[in-house]
Amino acid sequence: MPTPRSAADRAAALKLFVVLSRAHQALAARASRDVDPSGLSLTEFAVLEALYHKGALTAGDVSRLVLMQSGSLTYVIDKLVKRRLMRRRRCAEDRRVTYLDLTVAGRSLMHRLWPGHAAAIAEAAGGLTLAEKRLAARLLKKLGLFAGNDLREQSRGEKA
Image (tube, rainbow, N blue to C red; front, side, top):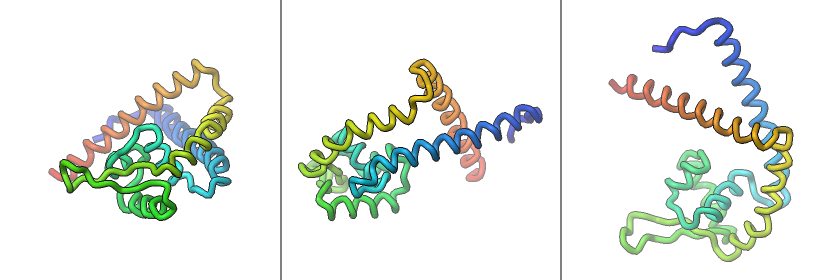
């Protein structure tokens, strides 16, 4: 059961939600504009970026990193495999496990795109100082962990 909140606290929470949503939309739109000329969607770019920085991963790992449901991810993976930007590779030790990895063409594409994309995101976040960016990241992580924990507790309560 939720804790009772004051009217001012509820109003501040709602305002935070709206401001956070608008900030996310603005940043996502900027990132999308940056990625569009490559012919990739922002989601496709996110999958390639995860593999570019982390190396070979399972689909489950990629799903968690890019916050995407597995059904949607399968569609994106199929498109990237068809474009020969990534490949599926069975694990030698456990044939049930499949790794996703960039091809030479995928790695080359990300090597060309990543520096400009990182600069575009840095520019988009330029309205905050370094200290403000770090503080915002800490506070948003705290908010996300709390909200996620609250959802998990609700989910457990529904199963009981």
